[in-house]
Image (cartoon, rainbow, N blue to C red; front, top):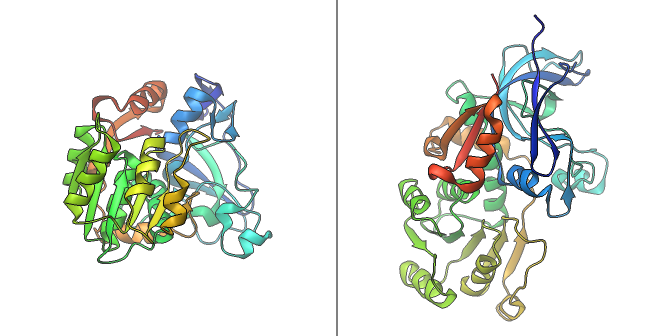
Length: 344
C-alpha cells in the first residue's frame, strides 16, 4: 500500500479538512522531510477562526509552520544533509536579491511574506538551507519549539535585552513564555509577567519570572502601580506579547522614559495609542516580524540546557485529531500553552 500524505488544510474560514495528497519530490536544493511534530501557533488559530491575520488572508492552504522531522530524501545539489538527519524547519523564504535580503533582513523580503502551504502533514518538501540539524540531546518535540523560540530571540535582540535589565512581558501565552525563557538566558535580572489567567502566571513563575501580576478586572492605573512597586520603578524594556490594545497602551505608559517597547503580539489591525507617551518620553517602539538567523542560537541554548521548554508542551494530538487540537489551543482549555500535532 502506498504511503499516505495527510495534510491539515484550511479550506475556508472555520473549515479544517484532512486531505491525502501525493508525496512531493524534492528539487535539487530541497529535502523531503517526514514531519514528526508541528506546534500550533496563535496565527494558525486566527487563520482557522477568522481566515486572516492582519492583512494576511488565506484559504485552501495547509496550516502549520513550527515543525520538526526526519530527512527521508535529498535533492541532487544538497550536501549538508542526508537521509536520517533530524531537523527543524525555518518557514518562509526569500529571494536573496532584494535590498532587504542583501541588508541582512530577509524576514522583510516581499517574497517571504507570501502565504504558502505549511508543514502540518506527513511529508513536506523544504529548502535544505532552511533545515537545521538537531543536536543529539534535543528531541524532535523540542525541535518543533525552535520556531517560536526564534521569534523570542529576535524580539530580545530588537529590545537589546542584556544583563541587569528589568523586563515587563505583557501576556503569558506561549510566545510570552518563550520570551521569558530567552530574556533569562540573555541575562535579564528582573522579569515581571502579566496575564488574565492565574494558571499561566503560575507557569511563568515556575519558568523563572521574578514577579507575576494578574490583570483581570484591574484598572490600568492599579496594574501600573503594582508593576512599579514590584520592580522598584519602571521597567527598562517591555515586550508586548498579547496584541490587546489595553496591554499596548499599558506598555507605552509604564515603560521607563527613554526605554524600549517591542510589539510582538498581533490583535486588532488598528489600535489607539497614547502618542504623547512615545513622543514626550522618547520611547523606542519597535515591531517584530519573524526573525533572522536565530535558529542556531536557539539550538545552542537548547543543547546546553539553558532553556527548560518541557513545561510549555502541554497537549499532544495525532494529525487525525487536528481540529480538536485547534479547539483546545484556541481557548487555552485545560491549561493549554503549546499544543503539538504529531504527524507520524
